[in-house]
Image (tube, rainbow, N blue to C red; front, side, top):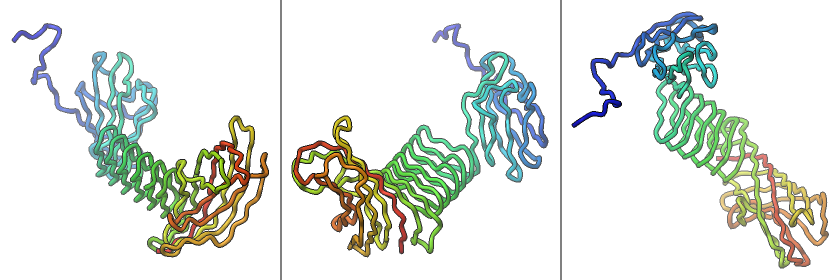
Amino acid sequence: MLIPMDRPMIDARNIKDAATQTISGDGYTLQHNNRPAVLLTITGPGLIRTSSATTAIADGMTTGQLLKIIVVDEGNYNGVLIKDNANTKLSSDWKSGWRYGTLLLVWDGSDWLELDRDSAGCANSLVGQGTRNLGGAANTASENYSAVLSGQNNTVSAQKAATLAGVANTASAEGAVAEGEHNTASGWASHVMGQYASADQKFEFAQGGDRFAAGSLAQYRRFVCRKEITHSDANWYTIGIDSSSVGPVISEDSAWTFRAEVIGATQDCGKVFSYLVNGCIERIGNTTTLHAHNVTVIHEDDADFDCQAVADDTNEALSIQVQDATSGSDVVRWVVTIHVTEVRYT
């Protein structure tokens, strides 16, 4: 078989082992000895920085030369920082994690250009297309396009989800985000922060203030509901989550103080309706009870409309409902933001 002359053969004799370097103090220039990779061992105290002057990394030999920097041991959890703009063009200064951080570069004739980075960490697990971990230890990102940015013992088990920082957080629904400590974001596109909080419903935001005991939570929750309704009769209609007819579900053995901010408008805001609903609701076992609520009319362009809160015992949910008593067939787009302070027992 003839080999085209413009396709050079790979000669195993030209393949070189990675260079090794041990560093212990600031201001060094990383030496690669024209090898394709550098294995770094760090022994100095604290964060070790490359030169911030002209040469953080020894110049390359030829344009297009690739170099991979791999931190193989950081001693007592020190770190290495490679400076930008010191014969380097990086997205920012690169800092490794605890261990096994990597930085991939290409020489353009005058500077090392960043191609990819992973600050990594210690015993992190990445599975799936496009997963990323930027630092920390014992973190897991197991689905496509998921990420753990930092922290320890965090788990991301759904596509396009992430944990940002902290300890023992879980993001288990698509688009969910968790940060803080011991929090769970299991609702689609939910976000949780603080400590010992749970965001288990679609589009929910939750913030925890620690817990009383295992499973007994103290948290703030926020839900955004929406629904377009044609008011062709005098029925009451629930403005539910994601345009459904079901509002936020109350966890078993929980009590809420809630504040619902309601806004509605017809086409081009020809008519606008605004209400504030405050109340208290609880769920014991499979019984949901609304104890009290009051409605404040902020503005109505049509006084035939009204708003109320209802306990939806079938779905164990809080329903914010609206009505046109005269059935005028107005088409109204309704949005409700529900703020909740929750106490929950196991």
